[in-house]
Length: 135
Image 1 (cartoon, rainbow, N blue to C red):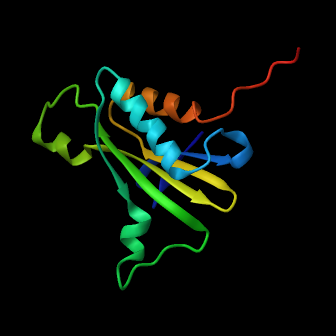
Image 2 (image 1 turned 120 degrees about the horizontal axis):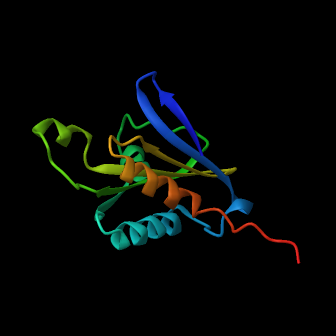
Image 3 (image 1 turned 45 degrees about the vertical axis):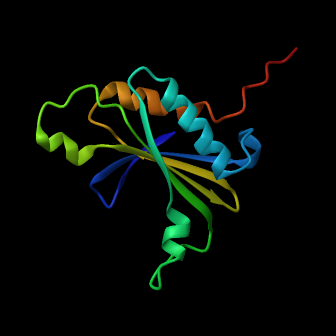
């Protein structure tokens, strides 16, 4: 997983997976995996899965890059504290899952809460096939 800045201001975590690197075969399977992780986290609250691809394709002016075959957002919240109204601007969280001809791209914006970043990174790494140990 790598960290990057989108448009020089959005700190993102990005993981690209080839089909051979993961046991998951579709965006829906990956979204279901994230939903399960969220629902089993003591602070996690699953909200929804948004089909960004269908939404954008359904708009008259919708424009989707040719290499994107599917794209959904898993929307959820950790919400351990609500110290000010401004915190609402960075909640809820979202993990993006896109399918391309090469495989899958998983993205999420860095959270201001270390526990959330650690959980999301761990969940993303869980998408990879286990490393095969030599016998």
